Length: 386
Ligand SMILES: [Zn+2]
Image (tube, rainbow, N blue to C red; front, side, top):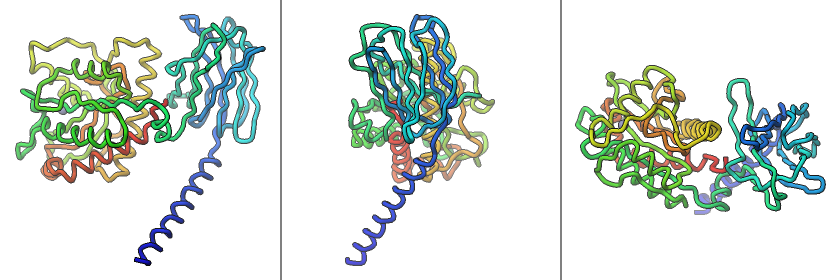
């Protein structure tokens, strides 16, 4: 017993050292300010964009007389000239280094109203751009209570905020079996079993969880996307299992919505998954590929960024949790009809029923639990505050 106890405390020390080293690594990896821009938007709001090389943690505060918006970026350094367009609410921008934090002070022409959470976004690097903290605001009664958001470890965020709502979609169902394995395993059964286990684990972890279907019924793809919107999901996950003409192909893959398929294989996959609707002629509705109807262009972009953020993290986390990834899967996207909900969404192909070994695994409760554990870890690692 004593040996066991010593081992445990020894492990404890190692973990503490690891945490300290991780802390130092984070400390050392200070990002740089790349640029600051402010301009008026077509709707009259002002958009302030702060671009950095690393994902910023930030804190907002508002000072009156004179009116100033102060954004404190932790672990950020450097200075950059601000590019401010005429006709916006920002008059000038100053930066000041305070230890490892960079304080950006925007002098305002008028008082501004409270900045709602949905008007604060962090966009991931894209093309030539780095991380961008985007703030949209309007003139109005002085912001007594500006939405202060700090990108915090997700666990803490989950504790302090409303519980994130997650909608899990088990693909196919009823008269639509999905793909069928060599030994007769049906996609609709595997994904329902995994969806139920996932619901239970996520509920235990403190999330609010809904399933689009909890039994063997057919739902068309619009209905599934509608449920995600009705439940105001913070994340929508559609679970599927793949099949490939080659029995050798195996492993999981993750997809997000885009207007154009990223590659030929993903295009075919989206066509196969979208064909689910054609089984039910009464419920068949023609959809326009890749469009999130209810959203403005900027909101669409924000939802797309959040979806990508989740998918990238989930891809890493699932691999780290020992789930085999389909070779050359990478991050792919296509006009998957089920992902058209106006919320961050991803489609996960859990594996291949066309591969004999994987068909066996997908049928086993132990492997289903392993998949569920990996997806829970991916969701825990996702920053719902983004
Ligand atoms: Zn499917």
